[in-house]
Image (cartoon, rainbow, N blue to C red; front, side):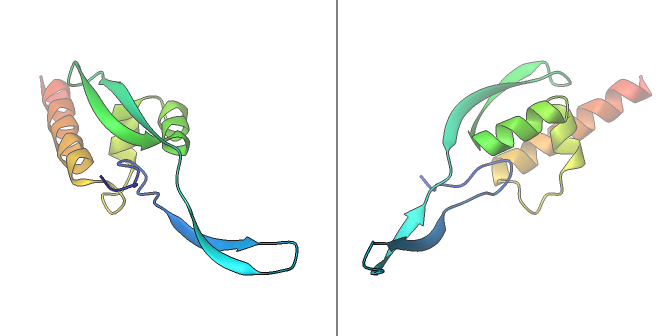
Length: 98
């Protein structure tokens, strides 16, 4: 399983460990990923996603999963999140039309 946030696209970064003697060795910085169940108000169901803590805070700040998906561009989203965004957009337009 890849270490990439499904909502923000945040992945691993590469850097150096620097010792006291200034020796440099490569290392990776991994995002803090959590398996989270988020609730979609428009769809009326819960969704399990692998999200970074930064992404989770962003979802909370935007007022929930539905608002976050509608405001975010599809470039950073995973395939599952893109499909979810399509479902949310379709369901929200059906609610406003009815």
